[in-house]
Image 1 (tube, rainbow, N blue to C red):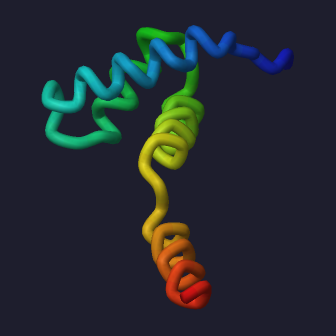
Image 2: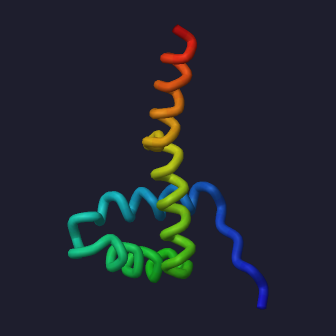
Length: 75
C-alpha cells in the first residue's frame, strides 16, 4: 500500500477548515472526522496536523515558565 503524501497547502487548508468548523459539531473529534472525510485523509492524520498547528502558534506553558526563570536568573 502506497503512503499518501499531502502538500503543505492541503494541510494548511484542512487545518483552516477544522478551525472554521469548530462550532459545527459538539466535539473537536467530530469536527476532525467530518473534515478528514472531505479531504481524503484519516482522522488521525488531520488531528496530528491540527496539533502541530497549535504547538506552532501557541507557545507552551513550560517554555514560558523556562523563559521567565532564565530572566530571573539573569538578574
